[in-house]
Length: 311
Image 1 (cartoon, rainbow, N blue to C red):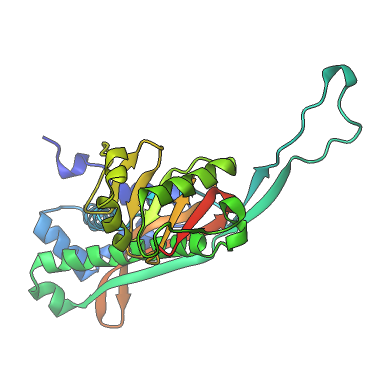
Image 2 (image 1 turned 60 degrees about the horizontal axis):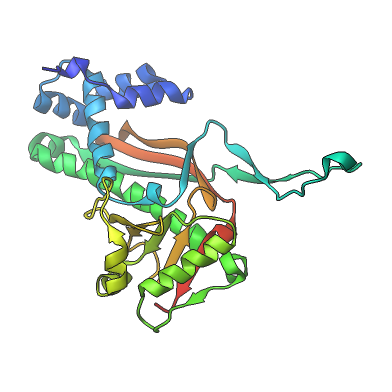
């Protein structure tokens, strides 16, 4: 049987990888005098405040995994710097070996800079008497809620990037009108998938509002093309895949009556400078934990996104 001391402390590992935070000073020492972490030690029968730090973080992480779909709709890359440059390959032209290369070979890359300009926090902060008296499950729920709100914000920021792409820059150079106004059909998804394909990319995700998911479940063609895989999580909104190679991701954080087909390997990148962290926090007479994230988002290939409207 694995004891608490033998279990991984994911928070400690994340802090040590970060390099800008100090585990002892910024976490352990602050947690020793924090009523929330003392309550965690008591409820979980822990002997080390480091373990309590790990437990609070695990509660937050578990909550994010059950909530939003941000990491399913974009390429995620951990980064260490506040600015990262991405090089995008241009399509070159072959030359005949017998003739040799041209005198001047043009540069085959252009550049996109990602800036870490998103930083969000949310606290689970309480008076000492509240921490002492309230059922422990209520405190755990507050920590989970804080983490879920941050993950929702991350999803909203990613959705805003896709929805902000100008129509003329989408795959095919225009938005795709639904075949039947007010209804999303399998034929519309095929049209959008084809637009991405013609642009030179492969759609991996269909980002759909719950209102439009209901339309698809009434479309026989969609049902016949659809299958559930191992990574399906209906409660979270990640549904099965289609035989065209894209999975269905449902979120009410996107705009209703619009649907996006996305090649998540090419369209945009999420640079995670600091993924979700929980840290001891005090403000005046209140104590608890703060959840925080820091990241940047950059568009790479706008033509790797197709948009269906009026559905």
